[in-house]
Image (cartoon, rainbow, N blue to C red):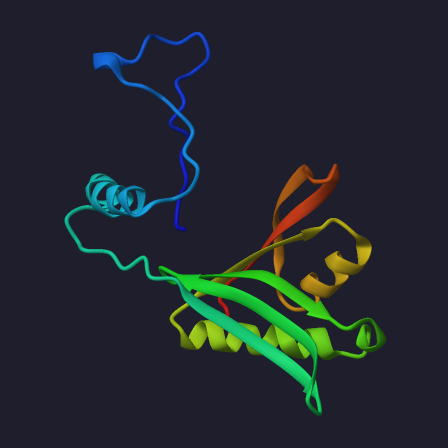
Length: 162
């Protein structure tokens, strides 16, 4: 899903015009997807002009195996010239052996081949994460206090990607 916006009226705000009813939905239906596809085109024109834009999400997955066993993965996507690394994980016995760094570099190469010029990621704010991503050319661009489960996270950017 590309973008999400709240449709709830502001607390204490004016009554909805024309008898609109605000309600939760159980799921993202075909009707909701159709509405988003139609209305995002108009919203994009307001921001970017009349050029047709490609918002296709292209998955990027890189893995490491020891024989048949999966021992590390990096998973993300490329959208509109930007990569986002969602997950990178190395099996516990192999951590600290350079597997994650090689996986990260391969992810960046694959993302660049899919059209990305930059890569973003979020990770916990720990000394190890700061050393790891900083050592691979990522620059901290934001601190996210209490992001997940009360822990601070960091947002990183690498640009150019290669």
